[in-house]
Amino acid sequence: MAKITDKSRNYKKIIIILSVILVAGILLSFTLGRYPVTLKELISVLLSKIKFLNIEQFWEDRVELIIFNVRFPRIIISCLVGCCLAASGASYQGVFQNPMASPDILGASSAAGFGAALAIILELPSSMVTLFAFVASLVCVLLVIFVSERAKGKKVIGLILAGIMISSLFSAATSYLKLVADPNSQLPEITYWLMGSFNGAEKSDVAFAIIPMVIGLVPLLILRWRINILTMGDDEARTMGVNAKAVRLVVILCSTLITAASVAVSGVIGWVGLVVPHLARRLVGNNFKYLMPATMLFGAIFMLIVDNLCRNLTTTEIPIGILTAFVGAPFFIYLITREGERV
Amino acid sequence: MSVQIENLSFSYGTEPVLNGVSFTARDGELMAVLGPNGVGKSTLFKCILGLLKGYTGRAVINGTDCAKLSSRQLAKHVAYIPQSHYPSFNYSMIDMVLMGTTAHTPGFSSPGREQVKIAEEAMEQLGIIHLRNRGYTQVSGGERQLALIARAVAQKATVLIMDEPASNLDYGNQLRVIEEVRKLTRSGYTIIESTHNPDQAFISADKILALKDGRVIADGPPKEVINKELIEKLYGVEVDIVSAADDKMRFCVPSHLLI
Image (cartoon, rainbow over all chains, first blue to last red; front, side, top):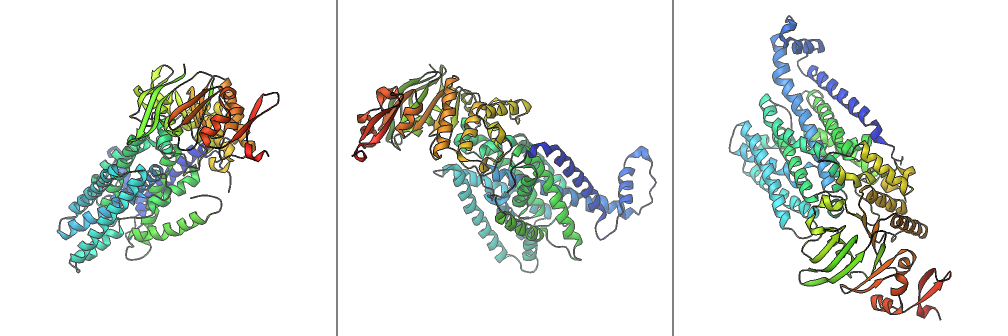
């Protein structure tokens, strides 16, 4: 095991490199897909929106339509969801002092699944599916916090146990909904939703998700140093002048908000929230001051790449939840078997 | 004047743990709290550190009642040094020490250049600056303990509460940690440490506070307070106190093993 070098010194460099990769990845993603769009067309279309440049249209109208109505929402959503799931995973890992924690530890995902399934069964429009998933997810975590407040003993353990229980209740409820769903139309829709996908992402999804995401991400960035202190345990944190209970509650609520918003627009996408923070740790170390921004950027890049694979690898699109598991699980095996580092 | 505990009592439910504990620890004094496991040493510390509310009596630090301070204000007066532990994440040594400066960073911001300098000075003071960029979980137990002490120094509190600082360490590291703690007392810190080893109290403490069944049964300099009777009362074992190096040092030896 190599000793820890002062990773913070490379921090600025790494953040700049990640940002450049992200921007390049976003531009590149616009050109990938069934309908070919060249980089030149993309840049011209974007620049043509600036009125005084007077760029003459040489592209087909379809190109503009695809860029703004199909690829733009999809790329933005996948970056946002990647960023949020990774940030939420990193936060939960800190708050629960557990490197194995992921965004669904308090049941946010399984509850969202239930909400979506319910909306599908009630034959509500897709915007309501998103809303139901979002609300169910928030309700679930609030329920978990409420139950854990009454749990005796260690607060963190109480939260995790309450999370496991309530999450499994929602899973059971989802199973029941699948059982009573119409097997020809509703069941496949539920199943597909549960596998997660950015297919069919629309501008309205971006508009729906971006507000809760920003509301959640900003406090996480502000409080990120204090998450370090929380990992020392409540008593130690308090003797260092940090109100452990309040900081933890805010971090959990913010993480939940961004998870719920992500799951609501993309379905259940596993592994990102677990794996990306660990990848980012390899780059900048464990200090959340550096880890949080790096994780956010890395999450966006990771999701963008995996989503590009999903829509371009085969002729029919692969649900992204499947692919993240294929990428994530082997990586995790590598992580736990790696020499010298405790997970 | 530094730490003044007045008639402090605390009970978990109906079970009394501390019963009218009073003592004073002055600036530059190292007080060792002696007593068997479960006697209420940790409870006493938690009351002083503001981690337990609902006690009766008063804990006054630097002239202010602890109960009236927020955790952040209290952290500027008292720092806690736990036993060396393994956190879930492998922080670098400097990050670990830097955490102590949190009470002094304005708002919710992360520590900046100024705080890093404070942390580095604290590491320098404890002789671990060469480990600055090493991982906290990859250094020895003694070095981890010194890092936790440096963290408390970086916290700029004048009162340090230590939970058995030398336990779980090998002999060399024990002496090293004891020596550093000693130096801190000399430079004006008030230190209250718990220990169940009377020999260690002989080596380093200025004052002994012996607790039994939640009450103070002895309070004074080690040589005056620690004797055959006290050890028997505290631990239920028979020892002889032997003196060495012109009575500069004393030790307890088990009586029945002397034969």
